[in-house]
Length: 226
Image (cartoon, rainbow, N blue to C red; front, side):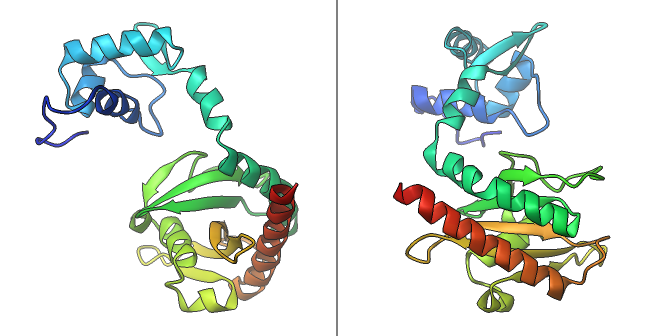
């Protein structure tokens, strides 16, 4: 939700963005009143914006409420970076899932946030640390902190090609991550798994994750050179 300094001086694009960003990861549908509250905009303004976005296919009417529309899905899938990254990563992630038996994640860091790009879930997965497209503050979870540390080279284990972090609150949930790099050795994304419950220790998992991250890096370089 926008803060109190959100004034009438904002642009139309600011208002459109505020309405779209009002939808959270768990919000399939929202009413106009709740959208207006989260965007900190007048209800009449949100009603007009919602009508325009609905005509463009960016929002859908669902039993008197509003949900994100198929046009946004189409636009999102047209973004080349995540699309090519998923193409390079998914086969390798599937192999790592079969080898370790745990859910595998790829995420990127944007500012102080972590955004999950793709997931290959374990066959026994009942809960997930993230959802595709989910944006969370990097310091909000062991998952986010591990991704951020690996991507920003702030972990001692990063030198060896993998970062390992343990949850301070439960002392469970050991995350192992390794960077996916580009042709210039820049960190493009991070491959991560939670080895809690797996019949493998974090050191062994780090070797598997590092090898998988290197394989994704090579596939990504090959795809981008074609």
